Amino acid sequence: MPQSGIVELFTRPSMFKNNLIIRCLRCGQKNRILKHQLSNKLICGRCGARLDELILRCLACGTKNIVSEERLHDRPACGRCGVPLYQGYAADISDNTFNNEVITFPGPVLVYCWAPWFDSNRAVIPILNQLAPKYAGGVRIAKLNIYENPLIAAKYNIEDTPTLLLFRNGELVNTITGVSTREELEGHIQSIMKIGNRKSETEIRNS
Image (tube, rainbow, N blue to C red; front, side):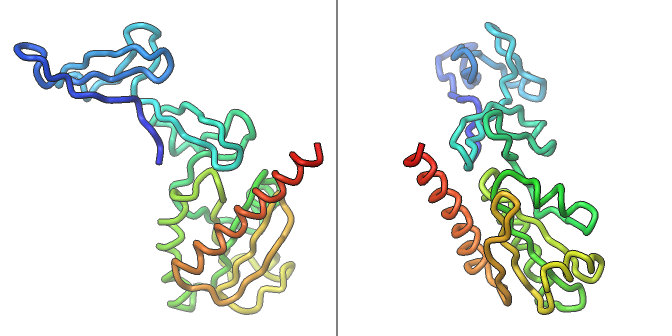
């Protein structure tokens, strides 16, 4: 979960009662904020940094990144490895965007290939949208309508749905057919993350 600027309840008597103290993530300064100021953009009195910033830990490399709350939906990327830090939903991809969204992505990607005429396929999409922010920064979760995108479906020989395509750094590492439950999806998400962790450990040992 993202860690926001540290907020404390200021409980001294008299005029300071129920004010908030927000500690700046950049300089550590404690800023006293009045209740009526909470709807405004809050700025640190010492360094001028915004007080609505969050700490997002990159699940790919572990770097802690400071990101303002309003940038969460702009797909902020890790300053060290470039992997996106936040994904609010499963992204729609197509024949035209597949290369940029999957093949050139620097990390693991789960592509859910589905057909719109099956209710069971459509029922999985809300689950994907719930899992996307949970694993944001660790795995990109995307969905591909094979009816609207026949080129990718043909390239990867997708005949049955639902089918999962698991990629790591642009390389297909596994193809799984028939996944439909949250538990199964999370199991495969965690497996592709472990593949990346094992590769990183091997690279460190060999360096």
